[in-house]
Image (cartoon, rainbow, N blue to C red; front, side, top):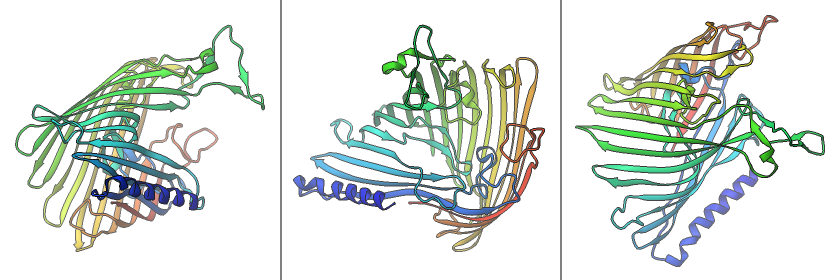
Length: 442
């Protein structure tokens, strides 16, 4: 951690000293970030975050996670400003001791604002960044996320709205990406005799978003992403090919944001056509599969105040996807999947800085296979918490310190995580948990 602190200090010193050639300009230095951490105890079934996307995150997270960002305007030439931004991330799952693992550079990019004389609001950027991620907060779900290393132009004025264009790329790996040696080639091995072969799939995203005002207190955003996977072909990797074809895809979206006296509401419709089809069920619109199909998703979310002291947030997520990928474990092919999730988080202000917060969530997911078999998963969660925040009347007020009790129940299917009997089913399907957590952003 000391090494990371020295690096951060060096970067801070560098970005604040660079504008020396422009002595008349005072750089705008900022420090931003997000963190959560806490302690939790349960009877053993799900003493870790379970079904968070499907049933909600309140009282259902026991990990430590942080994103720490450092940024500065480093040079200003007339009306053009050059800025740098770096973000370091730390994440661990249910690890209460190891202080030095999983530290990564999450963002590192340069942004230029004001270069286009006819549109001073436009930004041109190159680097690695969280690119316009869109989420529903109470279940930590990023439904539109094409972050990666790339380049783009943001907030370009076109007609009544703003146009955003980006090309990003990420590496994907896992059990669904399996490279095999082509006929006529000899495998390479390392000093331990292990085969040297690629394990990743490079995925390109060509993303376009256009947002414009619709009517009073309403905006519409149209989005389109062309997804282009590439096999790893560098050097001797030309001797390998994947056992599945990862094809192209097109993702389309339309969002309606509506403000009203009691809060705001957002409706999102997304279509996933091609290799991303199955991402419609709980995915971020970024993963590609060795399959083609069609997927559709509808999300409705919002923040509503009933009185000055009482309000709630909600998320409804309904999705359907099709495909034909073969499941080697089930020895049959995927046909379609239907899923539905409903989550509500109400709160009631007790004093200026304290409130009661509850959360209830439930989901069901039904998968059909080509041989006629079905797999149904479901789960539910109930949480009650006492919370402390700077402004207890504002849902978004942070930091928030929580003391909670939660009940979680999940379906008894052999693909769920937890202690299992010899027959392969879960020993327990429910858990009563209690704990404390802090969440902050700045």
